Image (cartoon, rainbow, N blue to C red; front, top):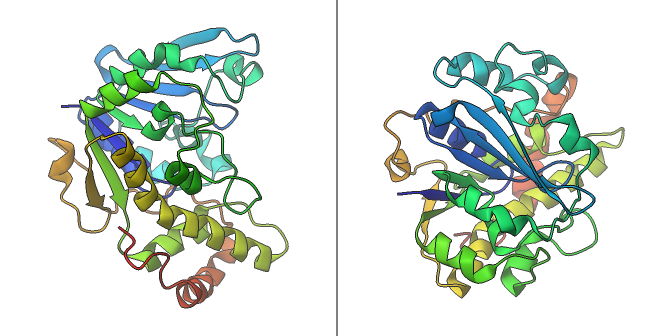
Length: 295
C-alpha cells in the first residue's frame, strides 16, 4: 500500500516525513519555496532528488548521495527546533533549513507555475508516501489567505485548478493509494503552533495577530475543502486526527511519539514568546469555530 497525506502547514508533515524515512520508505514532497518542485527522499538508494522546470520549460532533474541508515533522529529533530540561522550548520543533513535545502541550479533557474511538470508525475507516484498530493490534481498557485485573491480552500471547493495536469492519470493513481485527510481537534494547541511558526512578525503585533488568525482559519477550513475535492473525483480517503488518531493507519513499523516534533520550524523570536498565550486566548475567543463541524 502507498499513501498520500493531505494537510496544511503546521499539520504534522515533518513528523510524517521523518517517520516514513525512519522506516526506510520513500517520500515525495511536491512543494517549493521558490517555485513548484518536487523533492524525493529515497532511502533505498541513498539519494535525495529534485524535479523542476526551468525558465525555458525544460524538465530538470538532479540528485545527491545521502545516507539514511545512520541518521540520529532525535538529534535531527532537536536541531529542527532551532531557528534557521542556527540549524543551517547542523551536522544532521536532514535538519538543515528544516530539510528545505535545494541545489543552487534549481534556485537560479525555476519557473513558479510549471505546466509540464505533470510529465514526470509517474516518478512521484512511485514513492511510498506523498506530501502535498492536491498538487497532483492541479491545485497549486493560490494566494495566502491573508492577502487578496483566491485561496486554496475556495479553489478546492469550487474546483478551480491553476496548474495543468493529466487529470485522468492523477485520479487513477490516487484511487490506488490510501489517502489520509488530516485534521486537528485541539485548536488551542494548534493556534499556539501557528503563532510560534506561522509567519514573519514585524513591528506591528496587531498586524501579525491578524495575519496568523487568517492563516489558521484557512487551515481549519482545509480538511472539509479537500474532502469536497476528493469526493468530486470519487477518490477514497480516510480522516485522521493529529491529537488522537492511531498511527497504525500509516503502516509504520517504527514511529516517533505523537508530539516529538512539536516546536519544530519556529519562526517567532524568543523574546516574543511571552505574547503567545495572550494571542491564543484572543484567537479562541474570537474564532471558536469555523464550521459547525470542522471535519
